Image (cartoon, rainbow, N blue to C red):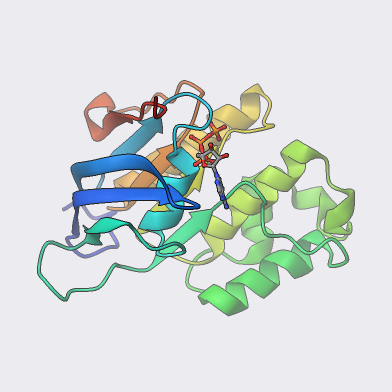
Length: 210
Ligand SMILES: Nc1ncnc2c1ncn2[C@@H]1O[C@H](COP(=O)(O)OP(=O)(O)OP(=O)(O)O)[C@@H](O)[C@H]1O
């Protein structure tokens, strides 16, 4: 552990995890594990089941079989952020109101909403209705949600989608800071992700069912 680390030791393991949608099996008998400071990248073609796996890991949909969590039977998943495709913003609230809402819902344990907006490059759009944000700006607002509440596990679905090159660098920076604090992340992405410490990255390749 370093001084920067804010999370307790966490070990998460998927064992025999099978999941799918609408009765269709997509990922069969997965086994992987993750500890503080590590990121697992989910890769594979469109429709392979990356989003489905993330929803399953988040507990939003039930697995067909197997489990994901701490290895001790009965222990619960640590608090997590699930950042999906839809960005979870309310179009008639301002950018700042959206983030303040999420800080209240998830706990204002991280940066202030204003500071988080600055981090993601939206500092001067705080008063704009979120519905007027561009696709990349909406993604940045979704990323700011990760910063206003400290949660050790980040589940990210296409975190770089719609982002420009500085936005890609932003995702790398946010991930690297999160890992340095002892965070864990699982991210589905089609984009290259490079972190300062490549040994903190591993990849799980999902294949589309025949
Ligand atoms: N609610 C649903 N009912 C039935 N099938 C679904 C449902 N949601 C998704 N699917 C199907 O599940 C499969 C996997 O979808 P998923 O979104 O998990 O793939 P993905 O690997 O994330 O793809 P992409 O790279 O395009 O984001 C797809 O064939 C999709 O059509």
